Amino acid sequence: MNARWLQLAPRERWLVAIGAAILAGGLVYALAWQPLARSIERNETQVAQQRADLAWMRQAALRMRALRSQADIRSAPQAAAGQTLRAVLDAALRAQDLDSAVAARTQGEDGSIRVTFKPVSFDALLRCLAGLQAAGLQVRTIELDRVGAGQVAGSLQVARATAG
Image (cartoon, rainbow, N blue to C red; front, side, top):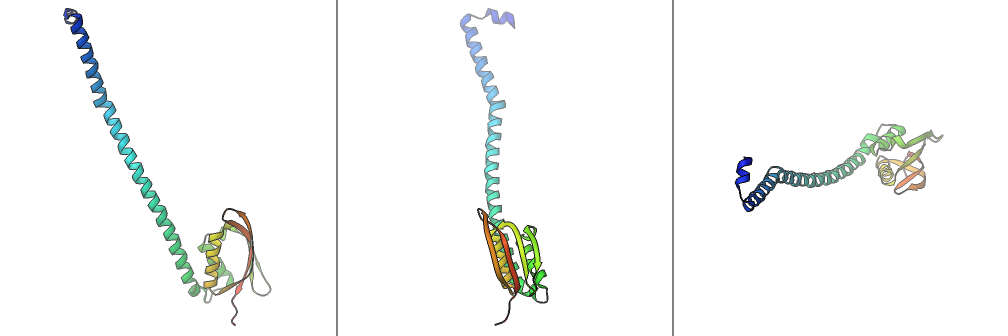
């Protein structure tokens, strides 16, 4: 092969070298670059699809939580019949995932219960209060302190609603 190369004129050697370089570049493009570029494009498409799926799932999760809260509020009056005040209160707190934030529960002489809680979501607390009201309970006092964006801490006193 070396003898054949030496037999070529300098201009022919130059043309063969350029042709070999072009062929090598074409092979690198066809065998390495193009498959890599296709893989990157395919992965970018998958990431975009997965982000869209995640956004849809987050919206669906929010809707599920809202529907679950509404179902808990609607079922609370039926559940409250025949249950103790503490059981109804605990169920309402659990329905909004607030039971872990309760710092203390104190039974009053009048049968009411005072609940002191650590920082919780204000929205979740409002849904809990709506559930308590739907269950026939009455919030006698509520003391709240803002502790952050959308977060409150404090206490509330709950009793069975009195007729009339």
